[in-house]
Length: 217
Image (cartoon, rainbow, N blue to C red; front, side):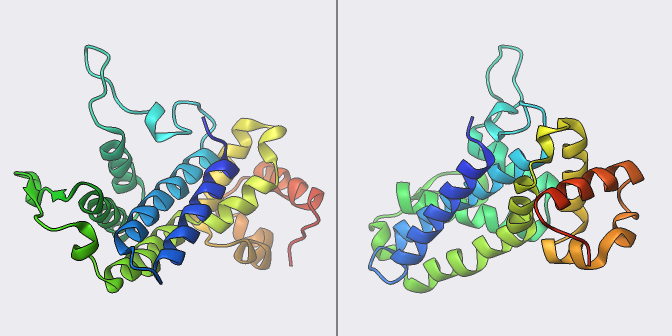
């Protein structure tokens, strides 16, 4: 199972490729790279927020039927997790990226999930620069903002889980749910934290902040 920074590094690598391809006649591959960037950003968020192994990666939490087989495909289950835990705009953006990348790769799509429709031209003729730009500059950015990727990176870098896995998970979960950035947390200080964290959790968090050279304003 990939670690947080492995997912984050892969997500940024894929995003860089998508940005590079925006200026090339490979708009279909820019969209595909963008979708796989979104997947790794999402998996990084799961890893940073949960301590249980069955929740740290979407594919280890797929429900099973009576025969022990997956009820959902990994992509469908991941999309369901996004739908259940994040904003509607994030879910729509993730779905847009998945559907566009599937069309780019397979030349097929499922209108209203009723039947499969196949395109009769190659994907590089279907997509235009504006389609790839929308994927990279809008859909992916909506996801990153709601997933709070930069804040997750900062919190994981404090290495709180090394001293107490459970408390670290609780603190990180609450901070990701209620703050959008490192700067917001440090500037608002303890008074803002008291609305969401217990005294013990604040002390735990502050201890790890100071160990990395950070202080509340």
